[in-house]
Image (cartoon, rainbow, N blue to C red; front, side, top):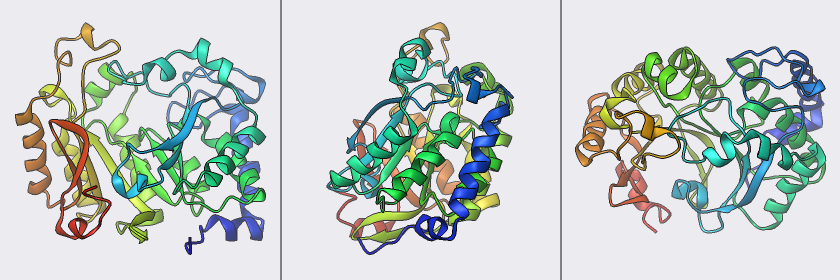
Length: 329
């Protein structure tokens, strides 16, 4: 790989170490996410994410289910973190995101997390994917620093639900190469009802604006794999509960119509979705097509859409992608 992640220069200058120390101080009165619990995570006080000081790693593996330009042929080196700062009624990973008593058994040291990153690099993964990192964002920064000491040189993906702290994200400037946030809701009322958080739209919009400010709207490729950039994921929900139009309007008007959007169709009712009739069914093809139409309305012409029959079959939403072999594998 010819791409040299910017975090190497930050490490060599000493700036990376300074940021790690500052991030660690945030955990004395935790504000890792917009919930701002102010608990002392360093003393293992649990905030609303029900997590203490040490990061929780549920699993890690070369992963082939991301967008093809991230998974490539050797997989994204995904690290799946336990617990979450959201409480989505329909979470497909609820067994690790909302099962905190069991997940506490999967706590690892900072050194062990760093070793996992090196192991995934040694397994020839294209990148390191931090999946649901928000509530451990300060701790992960320390582990990346330790991994760089051990020889980490891969691009790093921040794969998040979007409900992130701008303060923390600023510490990641030049450390995260690829931002992969969800933008779940354009409506705060729905976010409160179905994910149990306040002011989701405003906080997520601010977080994604910071990500955009760091990496812009262009995807940088090496050998057909993205090594730097921003991809925003949006999951279509039944009955218009994602309020997609407001999300797309924000992306087009406040960021750029060139931003890449991955429009996901894989919603299915699970976890506690049976408790609410509005989300207790899969989406209809007409609902997904309506979302595509809204992307067109706001001029969002870059990204991926999925086949309704096969939710893992991403296909390009713009002509440039069709020349890339990883889009149609």
